Length: 91
Image (cartoon, rainbow, N blue to C red; front, side):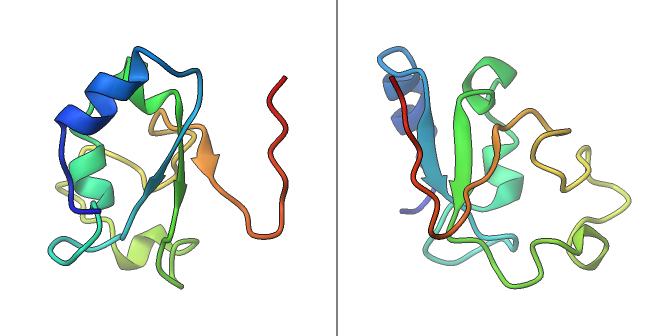
């Protein structure tokens, strides 16, 4: 989904954990890491990121010195990258 700040704002009040698609470049059909970084920390702290690009683990290739984040989702306030073939069990 394209970035819509109202969506995570609305659903964060109703949920403990959220999953959000994320591309690591700006423009396109999915929310970008840059756009998701504009969310307040209390919302980012509930989000796992998925649908990210192949160079997700090489932030030096997509994070600029002028950016106010590291490219490490945990350091940047998210729950982290969602992993393939992992069942997330929420009790």
